[in-house]
Image (cartoon, rainbow, N blue to C red; front, top):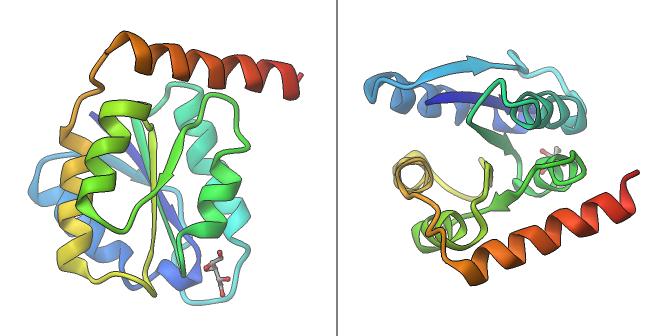
Length: 150
Ligand code: RB5
């Protein structure tokens, strides 16, 4: 599984912990930045990661900012992206089962590395349920996207 990751300056301390987790578990990943503590716009990194996933260059994306909110709002503006903002393991698991989320977002100012690892593990290891009702709802999201982002 190929994973695109990114953060802004407010996610710069948690990202190395994410990288440690990905490397320890043998994931193939690309870090789209940022790479230091200089203040940046979360928009630019969320857009890069979401576009890479949208173009199917990566299977999933993981984004970090201070709260996880800014990056998730941006990612969800990119066609084909279903970004889930999760700070608990249950939500990370359910968003895979029900929403087939392809990008995960969380905030360094909200969670620590232990919980982050469990959330990432649930997100990366839970398959989409494939149930008809969930597929139908995802298809409705796609139709809405087509209607609004021509
Ligand atoms: C940066 O200060 C902060 O606003 C950003 O990381 C994020 O939390 C925005 O949603």
